[in-house]
Image: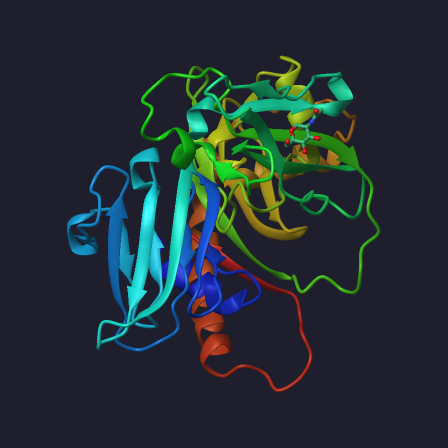
Length: 361
Ligand SMILES: *[C@@H]1O[C@H](CO)[C@@H](O)[C@H](O)[C@H]1NC(C)=O
């Protein structure tokens, strides 16, 4: 069911691919660092692509990718690496049917479990450079990616940037830590990827493409319970924002140890949200509203929301079982709307964009 939904969503929201695409010029081999736990898509736009993997320890012998269970080759030639682990570190080569190399990716999947997270507005400091003392005046340091976009353009938001561990010798090109230190087998505490967060304010540029989002009407919480919500399209490589009853959930609050009524999962950049209280949760990716999660019998809570808009308030009444009948009506409406959406996907309108809502029961 979810797969169908995701596919539908990617039709409705063509601007966002499901996974981070990585591309490297033809006839080149690119070296890069990425994070474990977050899906990536390696591009190789030829038909009949053949992928091979050369691990750190396997020397010159390629491993067929069919035996690496978390990779999947797509019909367009690209290779999806699902939920990569540091063991996926190595060289991925794409060859054509004659065995000629089309492109190659040397990727160091740095261990997300070692992620060092700092928030500038909390005065937290990123890691300092460290000298390695291996005889070549090597410096272990963090190479920062550019800041991602602000996660909101309507009000104050937060933005993040990722940093990867690299080693640099004087006059040499920097090398991702996994490749430089792969053979030494020595443990260095400084070998960590980093994430830095700060507050931001950004003007909305042009109209958001939005209007299309999913409503999930089916999460249920009892008082001692918690549940996990997953924001489609979200990833650590993209700006993600969550709101509970229209109040933003921030990394600042979470990293300063306050507010324990919800937790954004650090290792997925907030793709998952652990919640302990019923509320209407919404998630935004690249500033676009992507999904809304209503607790069971949410009509009750929506009423509560419009009555109490005091900031900081996240406590709401319990769901009313009497609303079952209403839910049934909602279900029927959902079915109709999904049908309508299918029609929309098949017969896309020629002009104009109206607000569309896909209800999922
Ligand atoms: C850390 O090392 C890198 C690479 O040599 C260098 O570019 C950077 O300026 C250094 N940072 C500090 C604070 O010394």
